[in-house]
Length: 259
Picture 1: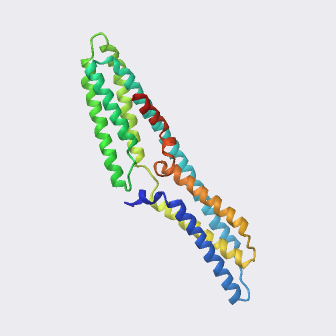
Picture 2 (picture 1 turned 30 degrees about the vertical axis):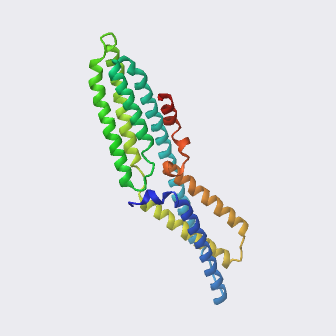
Picture 3 (picture 1 turned 135 degrees about the vertical axis):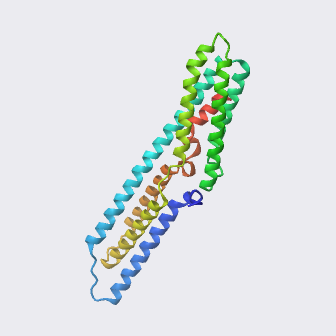
């Protein structure tokens, strides 16, 4: 589990190669039984049950991954908006505090964008999240000290505008840090792997026993299955498999605006 993040980027290919290998093993077993037995019977009901269970688990995994992806994109957008709002509202503070707040926001945004860079284990991810959490807490303390020091002409605006914005930023960043640790248990991926490989084994076996080899359709099946697995893993682990600029577009846009 410790090196789980390190192998995620290869997981779709591992699944696909394993399915191909088990498909070939099943086909060889089927050919062997045809040569050594007078009559070979394939229990279609049992195979259909396994395929149905595989489809159910695959569909559940895709739905869960898509839900997690939408949540993470929404959090990215909310974090970018929270940083932008406070950056703009910092004009109500005195000059020294305004500069300190804006510099802190830039550091928080940089750390947020670098959370997953060079991360190969959950331990390293937790360390990065811990560092970001400390910076967010320090920023909250800075805001609590800066707002009372705001000029008299803007103190009321600073209090009524910046305090809710700071509370929102704290909430959305804590939500994001908790969400970053939220992934399906590895046992679910092992279960899906087992179902897909057993299903491939049965498919190869049935093809050989029934003399229904169609390698063109088999190639299409493997291609679609490989793409489906890549999409599922990309949605569940977007920072490892999804294009960096596309997934972090809102945060990168905000970083450019703050420069």
